[in-house]
Image (cartoon, rainbow, N blue to C red):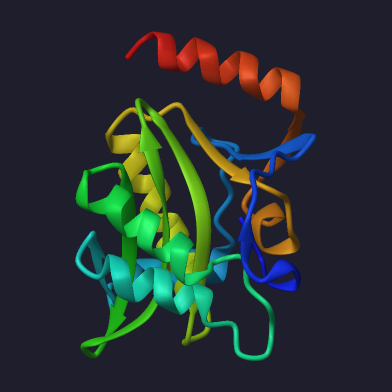
Length: 173
C-alpha cells in the first residue's frame, strides 16, 4: 500500500482478521441487484480496460488513496504478465464500474473497486463471482470487511486460518 501521509511511501500491510467472500451458496445477491444484473443492460468484460479500472479506483476525489502512481505501475505490469485482472461494467459504451485484483492458482485477491453509476461496482462483483465459480476458484480474499461486502455474505477469519487455507489451495496448483 502507498501511504499518502508519508509521501506515498509503499509498505506491506496484512490485516490480522482477513475478509473473505464465499464462492458457494453463502454468496448472497440482494433481490433488486439480481433483477438489475439479469436485465443484461450492461456489457461485462474482463481485462479490456485494466488501466482505466485501476485509475478509476485510485481517483477518490478528495479522499486519500493507497493506490499511488507506483502501485498503478506495478499492478499494470502484473496485468501485462497475466497475474492481475480487471472486471469491467459498461453502460452505453462508457465504463461505469469495475474491480481489479490478482489471481494466483485458484485464489483471487481483490484489491479495489469503483463505480460512477449506482450499483455498477456491485454488478462487477457478481460478474467476478460467477466467472470464478465457472473456473472452479476456491477463495476470494477481500482483505477487509465493509458494509458493501457484508451484504454479499463476506466474513472474517483469523490471519492464521487464512494462511493455512491459502497454503492448502496453492499446494494443488
